[in-house]
Image (cartoon, rainbow over all chains, first blue to last red; front, side, top):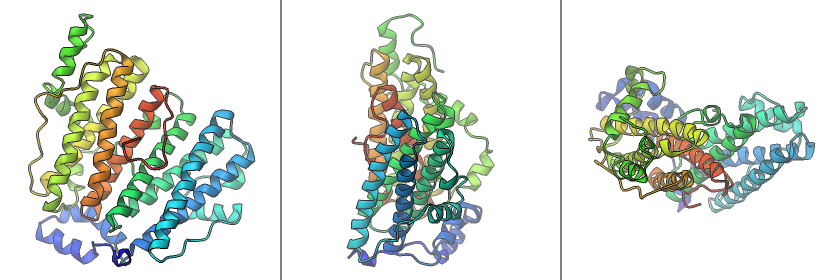
Length: 203
Length: 194
């Protein structure tokens, strides 16, 4: 049943809808962005596979960071708790992908491979270049922003309501992780820790 | 529009404030709306995506829960000690942006945004921690409303916008929990019931 879910908005639908409502100005902005994202048609499985690929990258990064010993006690405690959440996301998404008859994406097998994936997602840091806690936390913040952005892009595309609830719940957790890491980077500075009213992540 | 509820030093003042939190809400919202963000109204309107008429009811429900949060922050922020009050003021600005954005979506769909109620029953918090618990509960209700609403919204930009507000409210919860001495991010899946 879930295999039949596909994105329900195509570029054509948005263009026709925009013209019909006289919403050309709006279409030129966010509507067009959604239309671009909606081509070609993706299935729920392909959207979930993309989110799982990011989760696997996030898990790899946290494990590498924790093994490297660059974090303080407080940073390590937070990272271990967050890693547990990320692993739970991987388990849930793997199950959901399996239900859809799809195979999970590969896990990064090396720091170089993980860094290539991070660079492809416009990360400003590299796992290979971590020399202290500040750099580590900055990279973790960047990684959490990438995770948030992944779900921000996935949610408009998913069709199955149950998967939508799951993806939203994970996006909320990633946003909280960014807040936790941001709090370690900027203690007590709520303007920097919660900087914007609409959290869209790094895309 | 917002007066210092501690001016007369009485609990009665707090009760009055919390009991009638909604009375000055429209004015507070108007002031904050004028100052929120750096983009012009024209730019904001231009960015409003096309919205399906079928989304109006869902968006108006989200607007209602945002209005409750605005009332709670408006009433509660002055009762908090400085660090928590700064966070609450920040979150009030952001909740107001959410309400502004949701109202804009409702209008874009040809609907009428629901007005805030004249007042909200927010209980009788007496201490800073009482207020933080109230705000935590209010934010939790918002998260639950968004998790319920997101699958009901049509695919596309409107759903993404709701998701952006939801994620911000999840961040508020993390900070409020920290201020209460609790784990900021307690669960791998944020549903508002943590």
